[in-house]
Length: 200
Image (cartoon, rainbow, N blue to C red; front, side):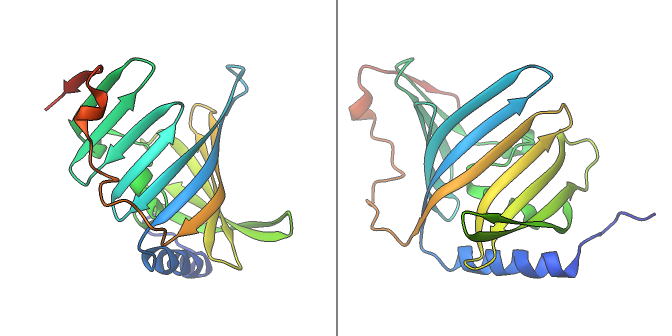
């Protein structure tokens, strides 16, 4: 059996609608719930966060940490450690889906097909199952839930090859919001008490 390109045209059509919708917005502000489960290790973690996306730039708030990516540098602000880390983001080393790829990661590196439809509080959510083309990845498969009325992503369920299941559910999805021009700029003067660690 050949697995070179195994893409269900119906799933591809739905994903293209999602991409067109997402690319039509100036910006997106999402609030989400993130759940990590591993029954073998008896791990269950739940957290909430929010992200503001403008193109590849983003501000992500999760677990008390703020990450700001301005297209070149990633600034991580940790109030608990009173530390700021600034680095050139290198996503090539990571197998994870980065925040700026959250709504487009599936465009490369996956085969996909239609999966189940679920009714979630009156919304019809069509799942698409994505299998990584690279068999060495730590991801076994991803289920992408799409609201078929809005063509917005509702949730993303990632099953790791180690049995870990992470679920990211978008609770609010706002678009074309008025944003501060300095949103993606790091103002060091606000963090004069912090240790600033420049990795580059």
